[in-house]
Image 1 (spheres, rainbow over the protein chains, first blue to last red):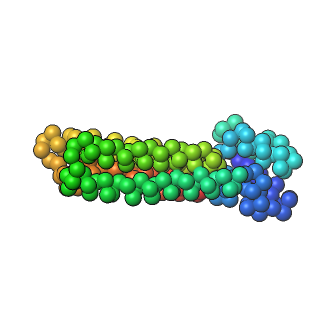
Image 2 (cartoon, chains in turn cyan, brown):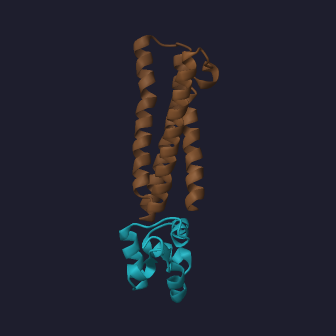
Image 3 (cartoon, rainbow over the protein chains, first blue to last red):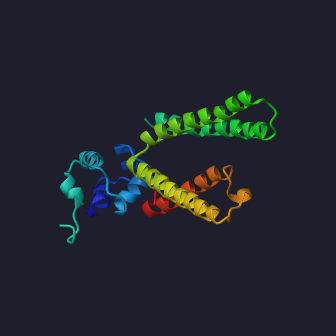
Length: 67
Length: 131
């Protein structure tokens, strides 16, 4: 699973701590999602998409071998 | 929200300390057979009650964690449980051929190993998720 969280974060000029606070998780938790170590739940993915004013499909994409 | 998370976490630590503070003197009293058997049974039950409250508070504190931390705790418990079962099985099998050391692997030591294995699982899972 790939994600564009870092890119979306950069667009808003947010740090990991800012985003983590906005979606109600810890900074370390967000870091493991951003680095692809942890795949978030649908609720968290939707919450993240909402704060970035985008869609889950833009934030998360399947890898070629997963598709 | 952050405040309630902190309170839930603090509560579990407080009850862990209360349990520890009751368990040690209870074990000492029972070991030295200071009281009659009926009183000893009550003394033996008290730390179990405090432990049950601690576990309840711990589960409540898990409920307010974010999902990454919940996964870390879940994997830590699974690893800790699996390693404890393995140790108990090994001790049972060794005891069948009279190879057991009560000084190192008795009932008194088993909860300690159980916690040790939980922390091993916690360390592994924390490294895995970087959380």
